[in-house]
Image (cartoon, rainbow, N blue to C red; front, side):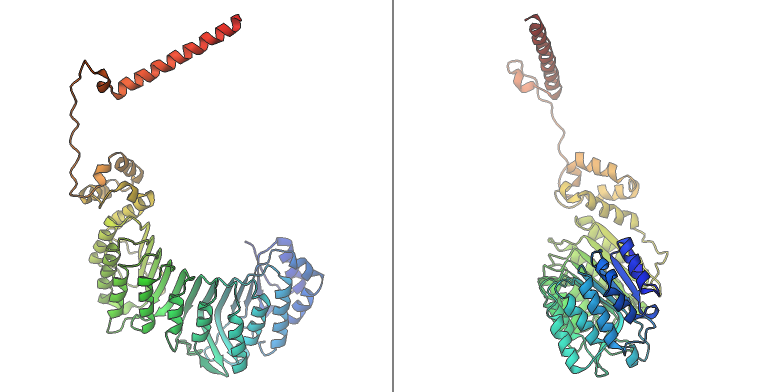
Length: 469
């Protein structure tokens, strides 16, 4: 996928996009004349662009203070929606100052006009660092258009995203409720700071989170700055118990409060989940401290006690090193789990960079994850024979192919610890009066080889008879 970034010359921008068969067009609003670009799009270059493969348009509004002239931006997006018939993805990024002013606020009616133009084909909508501004009437019209996005599949709200109605902060409840009811929506990501000074956009109720979690179509949910003690997180916990449509769940937690009951409920509900395939948890605050280890141990036990678990990927990130008891609990999980193929436990610093932390039991954890990738469940009749596999985990960790082959030809080693080893084979005495019962594998091979020789001799004889005739 080739990306074309805007230059100061509108004609050159479109020519580059047409010439390179780009699929994504990134426009830096600070460097472009919006009116000129609109006029060029309405000319012959616009017709040529309509035949190109442009399916994604990204508007970068950083340091752009021309939103007061909303008519020009409306015309530009209107032309883009008409010219780019293959447009299925729209991204918008804008600089958000600490104290927003009207000239830095993105007008909702501009976004509404674009969505109305492409609502029959728009599949992905991404808003990044943007403060939307609207009047009451414009906000109601915006909600009506959002409810008509029948083709929308993914919605991403990243970094600082907020909405202001008549310069008063408004929650995202109604917008998220409308998105949750769309027929084709499969992914919603709210990786945004709801407490930013640009606008208090925290959710006033939990109805929107409940609607997202109970949607029969949404397969992937991502939440940032989620506090485990609020009611919204309880709806996520209930989702794990009842919703089989959700397959991917990413949560970044804010710091813990004094009550961690919800996290205990979260771990308990993992015991009954039947649909989750990927779980990624990040604990962003360094004050989790001693609260974290017991929670991770309970989570590992919850997954281990779920006989119907479909979890393939488990990723845990925290701003601390994990204790030995956590690693032991995860190792105990992997010894009896046949599904998890990727297990990540990463310690990060305050900037989110990975530390040089390495789990003590990393070799053994990786062994079981890779064995699951090889299909360990098909080999093992019951629980893993722990002493046997534990020995291989420390001695043959770099020869998984050899270990896999050895388990395949000796499947009894993979059965439960209580299963006895097969008894040695007792050779039966040969009975002369019944030679058919004494046939061995070697005798069968000799007989097969004799038949092959007789067949070859018969073919040679037939060939000679044909030549004589």
